[in-house]
Image (tube, rainbow, N blue to C red; front, side, top):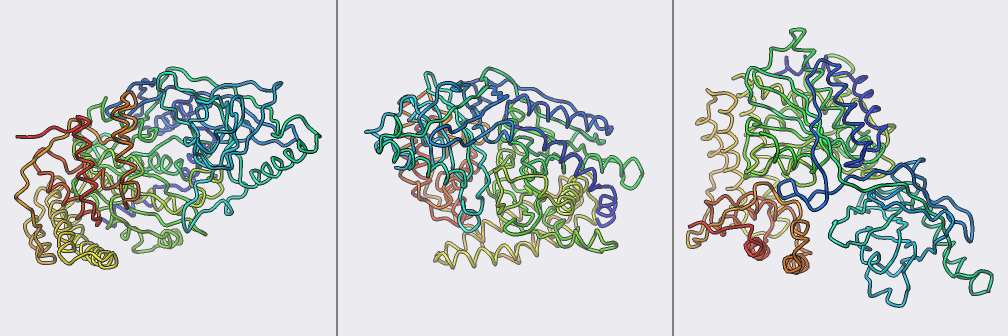
Length: 638
């Protein structure tokens, strides 16, 4: 294993990583835009110039269509846009050509250069009942929450929005930390029939404070009779179009002796520059193929036994398209590279490995966990010491990126993720090339390259190392689960269920190693795991109802699936409102979908979710399963 890692370290180039980062960062990579398409073309061209077979797969995008269970949307292109306050003072608020993030994604075109608009400060929150005495028709709204919360205002005739919203996160990000930063903001319309839409701009917290002062000043001027309106006046212009179009996925392949495939996925989308999220993952994925090809061509690594593929996708959208339109039956494992290269200073977090869900057991998670440490062994130069100093962390399965789609048992591509959280500049204009660290990015890339190569060419000695590490990792996870459960006040029987589920998962992972090493000592490893955790999962046999999914990929949003059905939306909204405060609600719902396999009873499914998540959520999941049956997404199995 160390010989493989050393050969890969020698080939992964910090200079190439930086050049690829810079290439991707110069594009405003909003999904379905021509600028995103240009970034995809640049990536495919770089791979082909490096001797790696790459192609662009184009998928149709239009409103009221789906890729599997995922609702699609039309192409949006913007070439210009700006907003300027002209009364009571002249202040530039936003300019697309200065930074495209300043125009809200999917804004409609508008031209109010010679017809100034009144700005209303929406300082009473986002509920429509708070503005029954305010005429919003023909106005620009100065908003302070997520823009989706103000869609009702467009139905009342509002034309546009000026948003100061910052995605504040407890403990590591407030608007005071980002005074001159603008939040990545999108309307992402439902595209329902007769839906009212508008345009919008994004301003920073500092500029927001200035605009608030001027709103007060204008009202004072009006009360003194010095102006004709109590509202500040602004000129606005957006040159944009919304129409049927396409979206691109870049596929690059290093062929092996077998068509069994190990995949790296990274999302290419997000606004200019979005360096860590996610030009870093794209750069790492491309460099993985380049470095492996060079090492194999020079004889430093043996030729590939299995094929290695990278997919550069628009997040979620491209992945849903790909698994529903392409043959993915030969893809046996994956790794998702999402935010893998920022400087680890201030609040920016470690390189984090997100593990697999219990419903998709595979030994690949244990290999990735082992590599987190193996890469830091045996320093032989200054660069090795720099890689040793990269902070790392591991956590259980969570949502938030494309690995959640691939790891669905019905998609059947066990996929771990590398990410980096917390991140002060996540989804903001502050995510620039200047904050990247090529040592952190090289560490992540070496890990990804070692992971896919060792899964392609697994040796018996590698299997032994993975099994040894699995036992150590198992005990660390068990200790952590017990500590958290006792902190939450869970009963001893609940804790035993958690440990039993953990053991079952690890036994299934150990058995999975046979897919990579046929003579792996599986029985001996399972006996070791049973010795370490002797608990057995208790299952109530009194429940007899078994359900099966009628959908083939994980549902990203129930609401978006049923936008044309008011009755279904009413059921969904009632359920969401009732359980809005349940801890880890979204995660538990996804795990519930994963465990529904047409063999397990409803009771067993819920037990598995509670044991994996550590959440006591039986009532919510019973309601959730009832909702899915009500929506005709599940069928009862005799």
